[in-house]
Image (tube, rainbow, N blue to C red; front, side):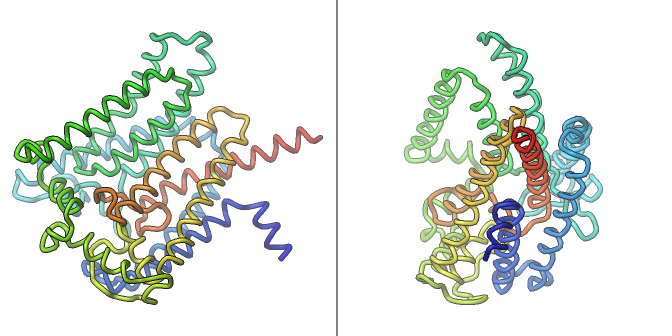
Length: 399
């Protein structure tokens, strides 16, 4: 018992990642009977385990080179990812116009979005890595802004915001043109959290909040009273998902079947669920977007509570590591990553419960997917380096 206590105290972040690895692989194994569009769904859990193993190799490498090297080379990484995103955006825009053919080598289209490069044995999604890169750059910008601007004025804040948006808007637009709204929302949430922590005056966020409320109110009005206009603003796949969320039972034969069948599955699970690899109703994307529905179906409220507890523990550990740092850059990085994580976690779980629209947002560290896992593991590696530096500073202060 004493050894376990020492491990928890000395390496809490590594321990929680290992716990999440076990939950993820076991949940994906349970999802196998529900997966229809994969050649060998019963082996997906082992692929996820391989992604975790690769992730720990990445952690080892980053801790060898240190976070400073990442910050020094971040513009090179940003440039490479921009080229990859541009290729996918162009391919998506021209795909239907040239007879459903890809013009960019290795580009892949899944579920109406062109967001991946099919590399043998792995699908690379550049947007997942770009979201981490954007937070790193904004953390760097925000530290410089706070260090060198002694007297904050409206003009200095405008320059800072414009500088940040110059980095953010171009990749966000390219991701949106790939028809991947989910990642755009995640990026914007990370940006919002960093800007909020930067010390900008509250008027910016008040105005932004008012604009957001007006947009939501206008959208609600158009949906209820002017549906023909609403369908022109939000069309195609996005509109179908919206109606599937608003009325899953009424649209069960079409766009609502995924949510409705998942609700039927875990709604009858009780405290302890239906058991290992249970199939009540089949629903798509069980291993990715709807992995939490699989956990609830097979292991009920208890399984869901354990999963949420592990997720909350991860968030708390990351916040503690970041706020313990004496480096302001680390704090801004922490806020940005936390913003992305909490947004994804809340949105994914709430959309499974039918409280938010289905947008293709996955559950970090739990859902199947190499790019998402590896990108967040880059952030985890940086947190481990921050934790190491925190301990060095603490030991020096004691001496």
